[in-house]
Image (cartoon, rainbow, N blue to C red; front, side, top):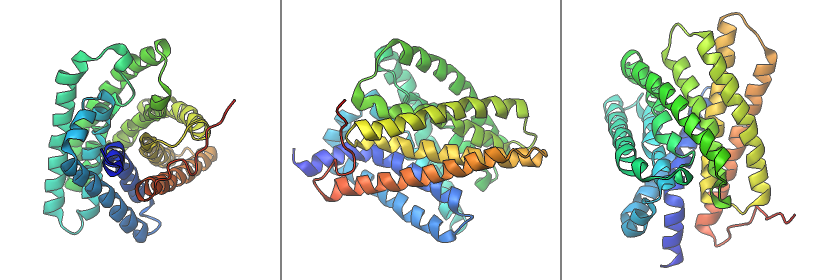
Length: 318
């Protein structure tokens, strides 16, 4: 196997996760500049297109990789990315955007059904990682994007409730797994996905008119606590390990937390609660999200276009 095939195998699935992070960041920043939205759209589409080409070019190697439950879980970022991208083109070609969105939902459902009934029953507890959250809690993306197609009161409401139930069940399983069984070092970065279920809060605030404070507050506090812990772990991973393509898991996690921080603060303002510290925290989350997305894009570019893998990250010897 030549090195270009090895690169393709390593980055194809993580690239979907990075594209999702980029698309989500574009939507978060579009109020500041439409140019940012265009740039994020082009970059995200390039990442997805390149990975799809690699799937076609190296099908055997990627088929082997997809036997890995972590890779299958991460593959759920592909339809999620398509759903986010459809919102970019909806103002210009609404029918095509809706078709793309609908197709992405079908892919998401198919992957989830396949994982649930074919892969999951075969897994032992040691083979379960936070990547299983992506397919199930990722249904919130349907809710987040549903207002673009006028379906927030139907599909949006159904899938946000589904995501909430899945989040509770999966967190119980994952907490038991992570407490009882050590995680191999190369897999540790995907623990960042544990902070991604705040997407449920984003979905709920997006599609719900009469928001219940006692629903959003526990979710925000719980996931924000995880966010701070994951942020600490991200810093440690970057200091302690060589860069790995699966670090792309950081991007969407940080972006969706920044989105939730902004929406939650705005919601509190709407009910006449102004906690300025939450505004500062949301700003910090936004800066962290921008930094990690730019850093990951740089590292992916360095990996793709050069033979240099560890140019930024050094191994710390204790």
